[in-house]
Length: 137
Image (cartoon, rainbow, N blue to C red; front, side, top):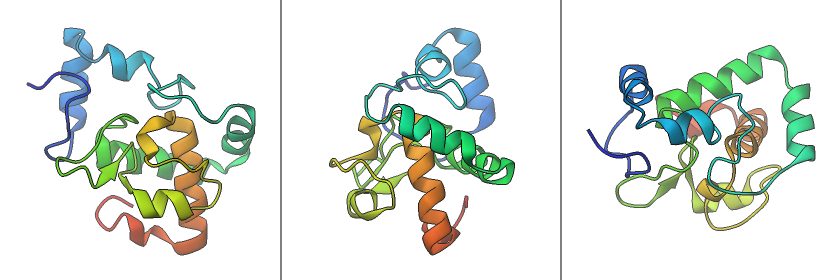
C-alpha cells in the first residue's frame, strides 16, 4: 500500500480509500479537502466565489463531480499521474486547467482544494461535455 500523497499508479478504488481511512493513512483524504468537506486539500485558491458556485450547482452536477473525481483519483485533489501529465481530483492536464472556465490559473490543478477543482470541472463539462473524462465522466 502506498502512502498518502504518493503518485497515482492506477484508478483508486473505493475499497482502497476505505482501507486508507480505516488504517489512519487516509487522514489527508478524510480531513484535507475530501469531497464535501470544503477543506483546503493541500492548496489554497478559491474561497467564497467557488463555494457559492458549488452551492448553486444542481444536485446532478454535484453528484457527477463526486462520482467523476472518485473514479479519476479516489477524490484526492493533491494527486498526479505517474508521468506528471495529469493533476488533481479530476486529472486535468496543465493546458486544459489553464483554459477551463473559472480556472484560477496556475500550472496545476493540484494546488487548489477539491471544491475549486470541482467547480472548474463542472463548468468545463457544461462547455465541452464529458469527453475530457472518457472513462469516468
